[in-house]
Structure formats: C-alpha cells, structure tokens
Image 1 (cartoon, rainbow, N blue to C red):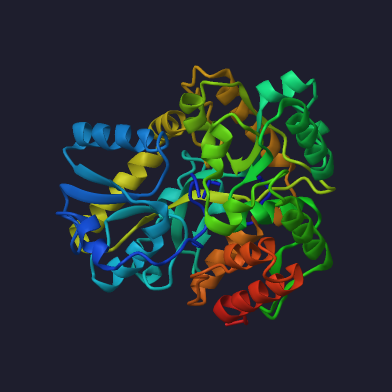
Image 2: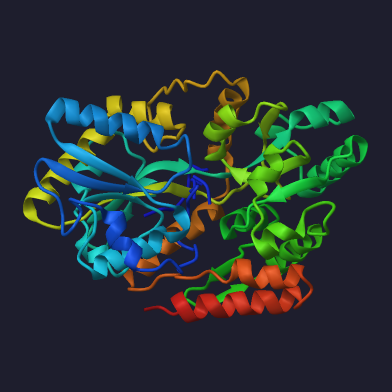
Length: 442
C-alpha cells in the first residue's frame, strides 16, 4: 500500500496532483462525460485502438504526448489521449462507469468504489524486477491484486520570488538539512514584502493536501482516524489550523484564495507576491512561464517535523472493458514502465519517478527548475511517515466501498477566514464530514 518511507512530493495533485486527491468539486454535469469520451471510448477500445484519460497542467502532458506517438509508431496501436480538467475529472470517471463508457487506460487522482472492481490486475508490471517500481506507492487489495501504479510521485513545496528576497537583502535556506520553521519563513517573507512593496507575503493553494502538509510540519495529524475508524483533530492540528487561518489577513496572505477561489499561482507569477505554497508539479510550468523575475524552490519548513503530503502524482489504472482492449491496455502500460520509456516520460513531463535507479536528465534550460528537482529528490527521504497517511487512507477507504467525495476543508475554512465561524467550529464540521463519508471500520 502507500505508506511512506520515501517521501514523495503532489503530485502531485499536477496542479490542484496538479492533481492529487479526489477531493475536487463534483458539480460537473454528467452529460459532459459521454462527449469527453469521444469516439472509440464507449465500452472500451480494441487491440488496435485505446482511449487514455489524463488530467494534468500544461507542460506535464508533454511526456504522454510523446509516448503515445512513439507507441503507435512502434506497435501500430493508436492511443487517443484525452486531457480532462481536474475539477470535473473524478465526476467524469464516476459517471462513465455508470454509463459503461470508461476509457481503457487512465491516470487518475484516486480510486473510486464504483469502478474499482473493473480494474485490470497490474501485478505482473509492478513485480517486474527490471522496472524497480517503489512498492510503497502501489494500491493493492487484500488478495494482493495491484489496482494501480503511480505514474509519478508528488510533494507539496515552497516557491519564492528570489528576486524580491535578494532586493530586500533577506536570506533563505537552500538545503533541507538546514531548513527553516514556518514562523521563521513567514517573518522573512513579511520582511521582504515590507521592504520591496510586494502585495502579499504568501499565496497558498486552496487545497486540503497543501494544508495537511503544513499541519504535519507543525506536529499535527490533521483529520486522522483511530483504530476504530473514527476521525478527530488533535491539539497540534487545531493550533496549526488556527495559525493558518490567521495568516489570511490580506497582507501576509490574500483572503480571496480560500474564500472565493482566486488563483494563487497567477498571483505568484505576477511578480507581486513573495512566496507560494504549492508543489513539484508547478516546476515544469514555471520553467517556461516565469520570465519577469527569478524564482526558486526552497526547503519545506519543519516546525519541528520535516514532512509533506506525499501522494502518487497520478495513479495509472487499466479498465477491463472487453478482452481485446484489456489485453492491449496492459501491454501499453507495461511498455510505459519499461525504464527506457518511463525515463522519457519523467524527463519530458518533469516528474519525480516512482522507479528507482533512474538518472533522468530533465530538459529544462531553467537553472531554477533543475535546482528544484534536485531539492525535491533530496527532501523525499527526510520526510516523516505521517507524510503518506492520506495517500494510504484513500486506498483503504475505496477497498471498504467508501470515498471522500467532498472534502469539507475548503468550504469550512473559507468560512472561518471570512469570520463566519470559529476555527474550532470549522474543524468540527470537517471532522463530521470525514466521519460521515469514510468513518467507521467497514
């Protein structure tokens, strides 16, 4: 399952995994599903034509585009790649299962009970010793069937406007072995904002995953289940979340991100924000999109825990739509994980690999991007085991026929930031939402 000894980035999540966690809104109309499937999706492809759904940010689809073109050239099998917006992706998959219109292969943010029984067993791929796939991140059922293999791993991380830090004469750590605390980081970012006239010290993805990472680093477990499956929030979590809500004061952090969905990435890329709490999936995009200032990835804070929210950047699955398509899907996936092709995917899309022993050479001309990947790979082994709790928990919920369809975190904390309720009330409501949807032993 997905416990963590190696700490992973999200995704990724891949924004908002990238993509990560299936906690996105589920309001997309089901009618869009069939049109998204496109021709050839239906109830499955065939030996010469497959449909492959992904959901990723610009830049991180480049590797998939390259591989499907190469696969057609080598095998004659056409793999139709469909990139679906993240916010509607879990719903499209759910509705596609109900309509018997699942794709043949998909890179998904999480498993769903409605279609988990339709998955191809990927054990032969996962157990191929030549692939050296990290078993910590496989999703298995109780019989040992491998339900999914990560396409990559992701972690939350911190970006800074290096130009503003240098202009203000404020130093920052560069090694995870000598990182800062959240309080040290916020003090430094506030100092930079004040000295340079920047608008905000920090933008912070409106994401439960990013909040979990911060809480873990401050010694909490966030919304955590005991052995009976009952969820609660510990004292350290309450303290950390109160601290986070307090940062949303329209100086240190803008309230608009968590209360009304303003885009924190766009704010950071404008050059008028000191720092951005997001994740590794942003690196590929920033390498091309940020031209007006120098940026850098910096070590994640530890107060006192060195941690992150580690996830599979995406979970590769194959659907057993029909015999010919299932066989072709498994062959395609096995080909993808051959080290030669998988290294191409990692390098081109800017992924952190799930396979060990690779030496990816990322094609970024951006020194900041190269340094960012070096930093993430240095940090991963240092993260505490709590970092993988949620990734493992999601798989366990699915295997019990449950899923966290809607994480109350964003809505409830948005109300707290707006002053509509206390932090304590917000956490009570979040805990209640978890207990209602995924609580209990079975």
